[in-house]
Each structure stands twice: as structure tokens, then as C-alpha cells.
Length: 224
Image (cartoon, rainbow, N blue to C red):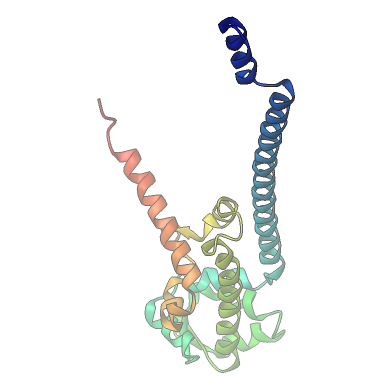
């Protein structure tokens, strides 16, 4: 074998075979398909998770609206106008003096359960107040606690991140309005035991932080 023929032999041995190239190509293609399948599956899982979180948020909003009773709104609005001392009396189910200006709240709260309450109310009057005690203050506290328990169960899905947090924040942002005195009956929560409502506390703090940041952004002059 002359040197030229030897060189051709070495070149032939070193040259890749088409069958080997095809095999390598199939392996690479299979690997890429597997990677693509994994990425797609992960995106699908993430999409399904986000959809489930939105569905849960909508379900909790529905449960919240379904749980409200005709007297609940009046109870909450009235309690948010009361003092710390009055809230402590309600929390302890003790007799509480309610200002005469809240008469319409009292009628809205008790007339459905006690049809004769409007007549009874006049016997409870003490100067410019109404003395609410016994079954009435128990009922008042019951409605308020039922409201707080339902709200706590809704906001637990927010603190746990198992429901869409933006949807919950958008739907329940109304809970905080310092100018209107809306604080999710914070004074009563404190008297009952705020540690019993950790989700409400965290949510209200988040709303306050958000409102504070928004206020700072408005007040702070733009940088140049």
C-alpha cells in the first residue's frame, strides 16, 4: 500500500458514517422533544394552578355575599361608630348604652328577629341613650362575630396564597376606609381578642401599607 492509499484509508476510517449521524440526530431530537414536553407540562401545571386560584377567589367571594344577612350591615356600621368602651361591653355581653342617633341601626338590626322591638325600644331609653342588654346585646355580639368568622375564613385563602390574591384585594379593599371609619370593626376585634383573627389583621395591615405607599407616591415630588 503506497502512502496515498494509506492516507485515503485513514480518512475513510475517520469520516463519520451517515447511519451514525442519523442516530445522533434522532437522539438529539428526542432529547429536545423531551425538554419541550417538560416545559409544556410545567406551563400547563402553572396555568391550572392559577386558574384554580382564581376559581377559589370567586367561590370565596360568592360565599361571602351569600353569608350576609339583612341586619349584618347595620351591625357593622353601628359598631364602627362606637367607642372602645362600648365595644368592650358588647364583647363581654354586658349592658351597653347606645346613642339615640343610632336608633335607625337598632331598628334595622332587631326588628326582623324581634317584631315588637320598636315598642320595646322606647322602654330602654335613658335620656339620650338606649340601654341594650340581655338577649339584645347577645344577638348584637353574635351577628358581629359571625361576620368576623366568615371574613377570617375568606382572608385565610389570601394569607395562604391558595386563592388569587389580587382578586381578593380588589373585592375586599372596601374594608379599610379610615375617613369613613371602616376598619373591619377593629375596636371590637381588639376587645374580643385580635389574635383570633390573624388573617384579618394581616390583610388590614397590607391595605394600610398599600394606602400609605400610595399616599407617599402622591406627596413625594418627582425626581429630576
